[in-house]
Image (cartoon, rainbow, N blue to C red; front, side, top):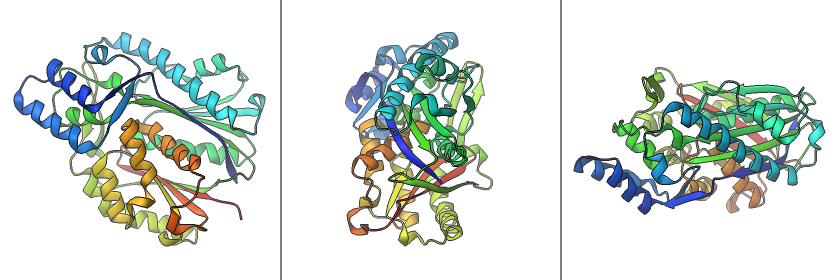
Length: 352
């Protein structure tokens, strides 16, 4: 069984409140009054107070060429990973030399070779470290990557899991579709790092699984066109999750001889207000059971795969306890949603 022995997160230095972002976007991007009104509604309804970006807002709103986006990604993603990893190592019980596997997820700029090759050199890891970069999981990569890292750590490898997303580099000035407007109101930049060891810790990874919702491939993802990737996000997604996730979660917990009522804490990927609300409703959760997800979306927005690691750290900082009415319950569940549409789950257990 793999234990979480260190965790860290990092957000870039440029940050803006939603009012400033809304005004800048309306002035520099949106031509029609209907577009400005729609974007203002998206921003207001998101409940996001602030977002962090790797570049000043005026540079994000420029139409940067693809090669410049790649240069920005390699520089800034590496900085975010370095900061998150340094924080994780300060709380970890393993040495740098003992880390022999790295799982890395990132979907916002597909560089080749992957960003982990820069990270290894920058941080003095063994050049022979086992590398497993993954790309197409999207927002689901946070939980899917954690599950894979835990599987490897459970086999005796000290494993580092990294998630970094520079979502601002996906902004496309010529794309004023509803999906682009929503994405511009939600997404931001950040990174997370989790170190897992083959030892018991305050919380251990018990199991995990993935579920592909039938006939949902077109609801979430990127459409790759001339000029780069464009967000694909269907308004039917939240309701679809409400319909499918509860039964899937119940089956997963039953396979681990648990009922949903035996789970003390729920660590949900903060994909957006409607997604959180529909997951809460479908799983019959109270707001106190998901408070960490709401805090992260308010303070950071949606960081794609890195978001759930911010939520996980926020929960662990609070003592890693279930919500106050569920004290003594020894299980927590992580849930993230990715293209596919996929639902990714990880079950955590506190040692007796």
